[in-house]
Image (cartoon, rainbow, N blue to C red; front, side):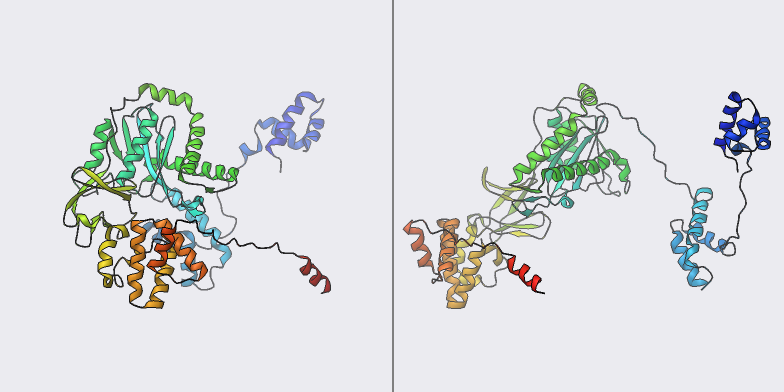
Length: 489
């Protein structure tokens, strides 16, 4: 069969060779064939008839009406599912090798007769018009702080015109995290885009049946920065496509930077934040030209940031605890029965009373959790030692593993009286030094000495430095004996 390339070569040779026979020979065809294509003036591909007939019988012809009925009823059915159903219905009629044939026919049906597919419409982005943001989980990167896994998210903000981006570490998709991340991005940006788009975050967007589009707190945030809010439709993540694609590219860049660094462990959170900020700065450096166009038309920032913390008025219960966002926190027993103001931040919780901040503590992530500080309740627990055994939050009364070891040892040696001794030790930690008591317990446990309030108090009052923990030295393993053993075998 003569190809299009051979005929093209023939036409060139005809211009340079003395005869048609020579040109045909150099093009790899007979003189008769060359004369036919010279006179025709067309390539073989242009005169070859369209192949619109089957070369072998269709094995699914008899059952295609049934297959088509399934597809018309539920177009999402896959060809493999339909093929397996046919194999069960007609045993032995359709061998596995015919799956590809059915897949091709189903593919042709979808293209010619199936339902219309969703169309994605490319958008024109204008400078300073739109910023998009969303949260992305970073657990897959395996980052650790001082050897411990660091489970976190990043609030990610992107300008759709220049792709300038900024990220903020957070731990939940709360409004406080949204507000902190968005405001941090805007102040780093030095201006405000006209519109801000999110997905359907519960922190910002009401459910469909709610008469108001956005939550009051999110509306207040938008008003403060004079931005117009946008939200995507339910299940249509592609409408927030710029930031979704930036998630992927940002995380790939972090992964590559970690591989180049040679370690995923950081000394502390500050070192990890510096690492991310340097990476973002490098990524933004290549967007300066379009970013300059954005900066020229961005709106001015307000005079100050908006306080994003949620404020709650709660009453301290008889157990010296408060409830905030479905979690339990302890406060000092002096406040029992009083109404306090709780200021919820993205990562901290502050307790205010009489216009004074009386406590600040890490905010719990999730719901139905608790944080009990033993210093808040130890004075009364010492007076009521019987309450210790079945206290709902007893596990929070072991500040370190050595306190737990001491409590177990005292319970084993002294029985009921051991509870009083342990609570006395815990009271020493609250009054003097938790670190000092922990070191004293380490010394007593390592030496096998009796643990008691008096023994711990004596060590604390002595003031002499305790010997450091025994250093454990593991000698290098010599493999010569293994070599000798293998040689003997």
